[in-house]
Length: 467
Ligand code: F6P
Image (cartoon, rainbow, N blue to C red):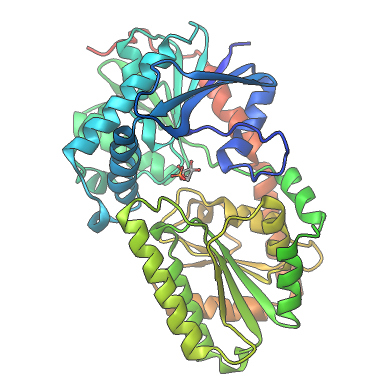
């Protein structure tokens, strides 16, 4: 059995107290690391003026962690800059927000090179290398340039935009070319896979073999949808244990007989939070009988606050919230409750279970695991209703949700109304069909099927180095 080497920007070391809230990637990769001896390499989350060129090593169970510090400039240019101010908005179709700077792009390439240098010294020839997330797209190219011939896979957690959109980003051509240094590229949906393959074919005249493979400069790269799933059983167990957490008890007490609508997202403009508040406002205006009978709880942990566009979103969300609550609230009833703290999974699971409606309306999203977790947490006898944006990857799978266009607040408002009126029989029927998909394509399916294809040496690339 080869060793599995995972590389990602964020590395989640298990919390010995077990109390911390495990990040999505950590939960997803836990399964993979059960089957393999593993090494997890990435950013420590720390900055230091003079970071070591060698990673700090930490051992936990059968996983070794190798953590690199960044300089303040690296963090600014690579993480805040190119990854989160240029790539992220572009890949979420927000071209007006995408800020390109040559210095940031150079910083992004520099960090990828220094990660590759440190990682190459730790790898063995038969390691399977699995790179995650848009921060590290050029990593395989850097590793190949150092002579690595390992099987290297990449999973792209966010949308891959249409070639016409991605092509607007300076540096996109070089990034597209570096995709060819991977053996397998996983994306969330077939649409993302098609966008990426078309981009490579259009840009370089690469040839396509069958549905999934593109051949560029003699290298074969398989590009396929592997929709990421959740740990269904684990999440359901957490949801069943109603925790005696203060937040859950207070929510239940403050709701009284009112029904709860819930949204949970990082505070990110791709999630459509102010737009969702306005859709809820529209619902209250169109359905005055519902005023005082329903509460919308939006949990939106602050994220990437050093990036100006996120600070601006935070102001917009607070202003929208204040305006709506001021205009429509009454003594004893606040229409929208809004919190920017992060809560443990156990609290979120309990809140999902209590909520009659899960409102998941991103403007664009790779997958959106909140949608799947909301469904998994429901009581099978009396499940709630999922309202889901057509622009979330999850909408390709969860076709029994109420699928909406988040740009149309009237449509979302009507979906809220219909969801609140939906009878139990229909709620159960839709929930069962969604659960079947969520169970069939859970996180183990995702990790196993990706790693199986990555390890499959059929049609293996022989010429590893690009010329
Ligand atoms: O969804 C993409 C992603 O990079 C995740 O892997 C990550 O957990 C999340 O966004 C949060 O972003 P950040 O690491 O910038 O806080």
